[in-house]
Image (tube, rainbow, N blue to C red; front, side):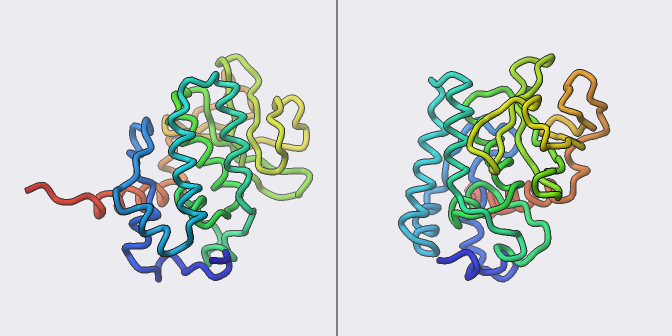
Length: 230
């Protein structure tokens, strides 16, 4: 189904959006395990290609034997294959942060969707959450707000940037086209200049409405999709 034909999330059948929820715990982020009905429902609503992308994602998330460098390259390449589509065209909203399952099912999203999917996947592969921050920046090339994923090999390191705008993973020192404003992960929210040690902690990611909405929608759908205990 083409991206422009996707139903608005508020109007879609509830079973469809249960399936499109991210089927792993938002708290632990340690495993990507699909609800048994996920692939069937996604296949019915989208196509076989969508199912294959989800299966490939699950397989990728289990490649824990890779080095961290290999994980970064594989995850960046995997999600950058999705088409860039604005939130208005894709979801009918100005700022909709999609779960990775939504991104892969539609095979389309915007910069926030790429960055968040890469973050969740790398954590599931064993990369420490402390090394990863989703970073809100200004792209000087686009002259607009943008989002990337920053990877810090050590707390003192200049991060490497995973970006949907370019295929290469480059050091932030090489990305003079990006002006950082703030960054976050599940542990906190910081004012950042890509300097982790000097970044000012300003709260928790729950202060970000779009992030909070993503997790709330994800958790609600996960609870609804789980059979009640007898």
